[in-house]
Amino acid sequence: MDDQIQRLVDKVWTKLLSTPPSSRYMVAISGIPGSGKTSLAKVMTQKTNAHYAKEHPDKPPVATWIAMDGYHLTRAQLAAMPDPVHAMARRGAAFTFDPVKFTQLVRLLRADIGAESATIYAPSFDHAVKDPVENDVPIPATARVVFFEGNYLSLNKEPWTEAARLMDELWFVEVDFEVARKRLVKRHVEAGIAKDEAEADKKAVESDLVNGREIVENRLDVAEVIVSREDAGWL
Figure 1 (cartoon, helix red, strand yellow):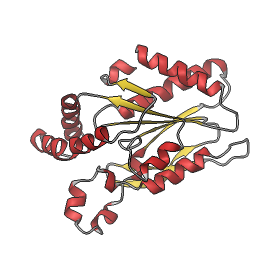
Figure 2 (cartoon, rainbow, N blue to C red):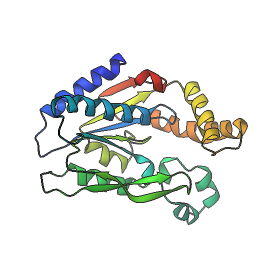
Figure 3 (cartoon, helix red, strand yellow):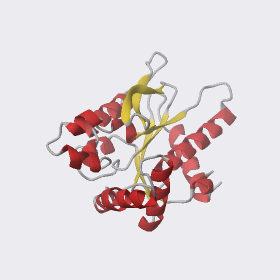
Figure 4 (cartoon, rainbow, N blue to C red):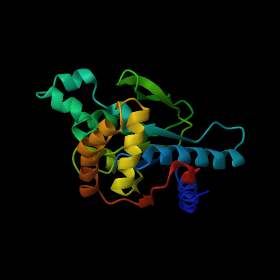
């Protein structure tokens, strides 16, 4: 396992042991597009659950992860903006998300939990229809470690900072912009977001990395800066 991942898993485990049974330990992972936030959230969830399973083999997983993608504004909401063409072209920018709704979820998960606590549901994002799907990601009361991942989770702008204040820790995945650009071009072509590499590169340069500069230049103080690796390096 990557040394920095092992250190983070050990840290999360220590923090969980000192967290009251009625509370969750919540970490927000942010970074520019193409940094590897999703990969890190998945790996941290897997490794934390594996560690927990060794000591509690008969209990359900203790960790889960939630993507901020479910908080994209819908295409209908973007179409209702004063400049819908610009809004759609810039989808993925901070103004095309619903941070207030996201903060509501964080507040629900911050509340005390017990044996009778109900499962809370978060939205997902359906890339086929290009819109969020409501109540699609279950977060049971047994999920006492929650990793959130998204571009703007450490953005020093209201109302994003409200959600940030509710987290136990903020982490940031650091990556070279040119590395992120190459990853984004490949991703956009494979996902059908762009018809070819030229179109994918245009989106990466004119939208994704513009957002990236805002993220880097307006970042809150974070507890951890994780150097990005290719996905295989974190597994």
